[in-house]
Length: 465
Ligand code: ADQ
Image 1 (cartoon, rainbow, N blue to C red):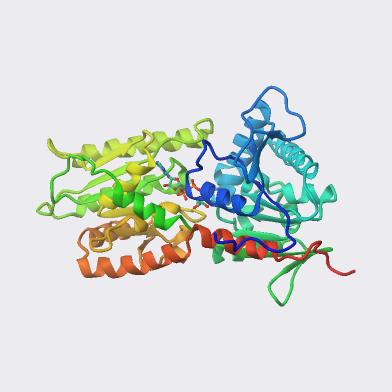
Image 2: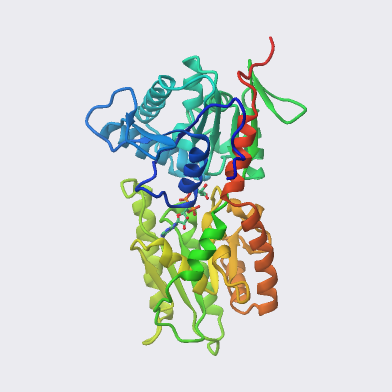
């Protein structure tokens, strides 16, 4: 990052995220970017330990790179169930993905969420120095800023939310709706993925009569001054393009002229997989039998299998896949291949490069990095076509994709037809425009923009009485 993050007089960077990097060389865009920022600035990365029977205050040093330390906070099995699977993933995740119908509200889960945020706050407060900057990640720690302030911590504290921000009417489904503004106001900088999220956050903040917006767009709640801005996350585009270029050729057993459509997702109801399958079904039903027979390869390993909504989506998807193949397959053709097995990143990169069309069509998504990875992986002389849901945060930057509404199966099917038949000139033109954004606003751009804003915040940030 060429020293862009060093600011005279600023102390260490303290990153808090649910997960910590695994292995010696961190992989994955976000993990690698945070590793780079910490290597440049120096500091500490805190994440959850594997659950145990008892949990006490304090951080456990688990080693790390010479430039920064890695440490874990403790979590009991019960807290894993109530704080992580419960409040984080069965309340905040569905709510923030516009699915209040899936909320599983239990007071004990919120109590565990509060207890864990409070314990992490005490553990961090015990080790920080006055000039340190704290960067909190995601919905697992929405209360952490408030808990740190309650302990008297006046350091710069920022949060970045990787998922969408909910709208005000959905937030009312949460028993804690009245305190969200207070949680957010405790941070100096609330980073969101898109402008759409910033607008949603404004409506939620204004639900609190103590919150006011100033002429410069910043916010005040009682004596705290804070900012809410969008910082669309990027990928390590150059490295990803190289991985895709160098990927081994894949043996997919497709007819030479058969178009390959690809979907790569974690199995999650927010990713719109069932809607995507129905659109493919609609495309197959309308397609001219003389055209080459397409194959749609969907890779979707299971996640959060302990949560009921995830078991249900898996069953629904398996039924849809079976019925689509039942209706359209032939002796020598399986139109839909659904792979639940984990596939390595290098292989995924090769698949992106080989695929003629990518289907990135979530019903709600903070950003969606698959859209950016697909663009980075293409051969610019013969690129594939990105079909992107306008509900993905990535759509704000990636207007040259074929944008679709995943709820409209016929319109979506028409976009598949258009993508499969798109002339080379148009593919190159759209791809060049998309690649330009993906390369320019990459992961280093994201880290530097966010941290530069946060680290320029004067400390302590208090409104004059
Ligand atoms: P996720 O919901 O995990 O992340 P996303 O951004 O789509 O979603 O993917 C993250 C990474 O996982 C990508 O690098 C992708 O290649 C990889 N991945 C996804 N499915 C895979 C599969 N089947 N096999 C192997 N690798 C796979 C959250 C938010 C997103 C936001 C990111 C980053 O939900 O909206 O973009 O954080 O802020």
